[in-house]
Amino acid sequence: MAFMRVEDVISGKMGKAYATINGEVHEMLYLKNIEGRVEKKKVEIPVLGKTGTQHKAGGWSGTGTATVYYATSKFRELMLEYIKTGKDTYFDILVENEDPTSNIGKQTVILKGVNLDSAIMAKLDIESETLDEEISFTFNDVDMPNKFNPIK
Image (cartoon, rainbow, N blue to C red; front, side, top):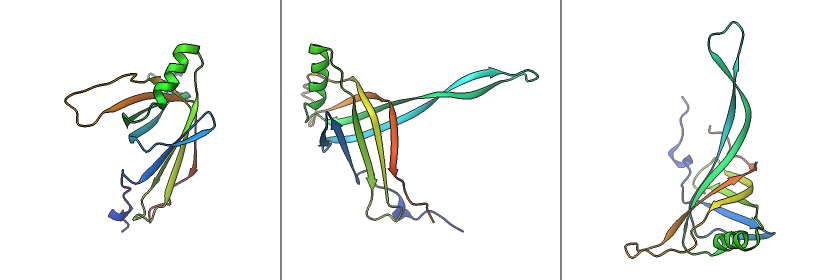
């Protein structure tokens, strides 16, 4: 009987993330968490002879959130450029999961055409020991150049 080895569970702390913005690669050392999610859009299709409505995929939408330590001005700079000039920026985020204890290897996912929905422009909080901020975004494409090895 096969089962998953505890060593193959990927640690949430073992990974890297990079943002490529205007051709410059920025290691996201300030990242606390990130999640990119794809949601399929379904079209309802009534079919003759069936009382229920059937569903067919009719596209997808990519959205995400990231929580970062309030230790970079990069996202505020991107928003400020949009506010002042109307120039919006699309960039890529590469997320790599690799736990050296695990035998399942590395997974790399690239969220392409990332565009910020919101960013905190200024923040103070006398009750916090550390400041962080949540950033929401959309993305237009995704690639997965490295996949985890199958669990054996």
